[in-house]
Length: 194
Image 1: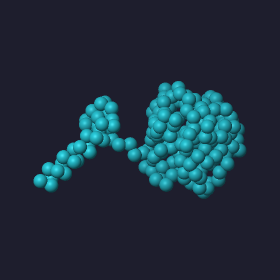
Image 2 (image 1 turned 90 degrees about the vertical axis):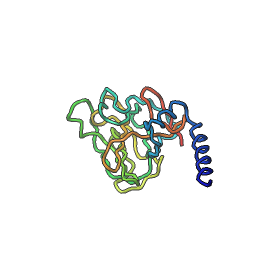
Image 3 (image 1 turned 135 degrees about the vertical axis):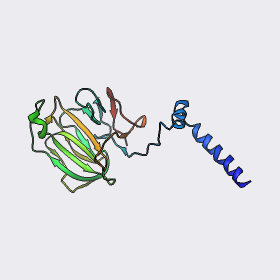
Image 4 (image 1 turned 30 degrees about the vertical axis):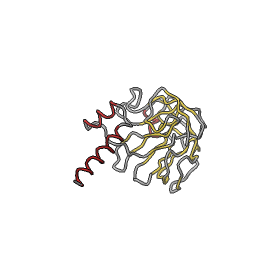
């Protein structure tokens, strides 16, 4: 009898929780096509209140083919902020050149931040002397860490943002936005919120 009562209660709880999903989400869950997303949540990598156009996203055809990264179009000198807390693992800020030649590939100023789970976030194309942190510094999520630029392999000023997990696999990231926690889509403006 206790097993039957437990089964009925469990079934009701399961039905109630599924009622919060759309019909398509329920079908996908039943078919095993969707798994709960417990990946870390990131802030947008720029100052709170700032709004920028996402010009390229994951696997975009311009220069992100087979690459899971994001490009935000922004003026030189725009504030770059830590999308997630961590420790600064690497920096480069001595370059003042950029363009679409292979010789510029190693000229991109950048910051790499290692997170508590072993993953790393990379912020590229920063301006010369535009890094505000040092290797070994601990940064908080949302902290101002540098300024955008146009260095390295780039056609125009923008921020290239990319994340790798602890195993070194390039991964997609979810962000806090006005519309909730989402994966970003290119061709849209996003405003940084906390």
